[in-house]
Length: 112
Image (cartoon, rainbow, N blue to C red; front, side, top):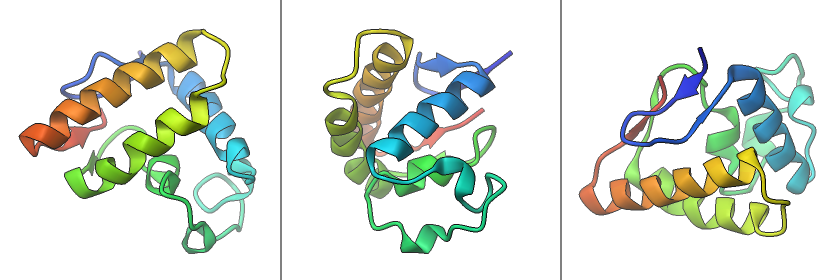
């Protein structure tokens, strides 16, 4: 059992997805576990990075829409560009590819 998306073959275990988002958050200078929704008090409205909606999004339901994905896709690519090859980078690039297709077809990415 793990985190999957509709219209994407990217997947993580729930703990793996948390670790992935923790790495992304670190790249933009925040500690994910210090933020609202992750046992902390940090305010998401103070985070002025396009990746923020992806970081604080519910990991087992909900959607990201075309407008959000248009901002998230280039930021994801930028943040993982120099990561070592491995599951996180491979799945991230798959998610980027799939989000790009969804943007073109104006369909949301659903977390499930």
